[in-house]
Image (cartoon, rainbow, N blue to C red; front, side, top):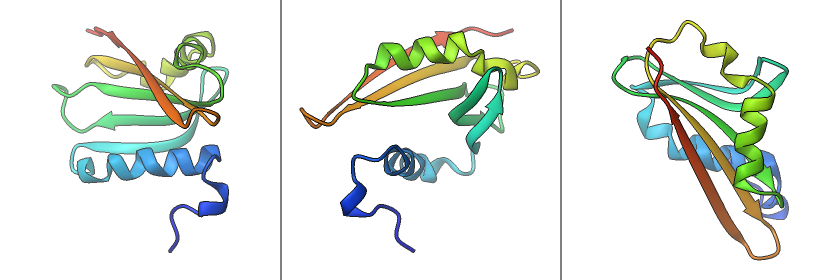
Length: 114
């Protein structure tokens, strides 16, 4: 099957696929959820680890915006609600792709959750 169509390279779904492939190697460590309904919307990607010593991740993807606005959306829409029962640390990851410059930016915040 085709993962990314070159005609829609700048599409958010292709961006999601790239990140999913990046974490493909970690399938023994994480359960991956795409567009998980949580809080006040849908988190683009949520990775819940099988082991508590690995942080869970909430990833928000943006296109022609900013990595900071992606992080803010995670907080504003309470995407970590899906992880209320998770006892390990959390990583909030905001990623942006700028179509004009063809550059990706990323901001990560760690929340110590006990």
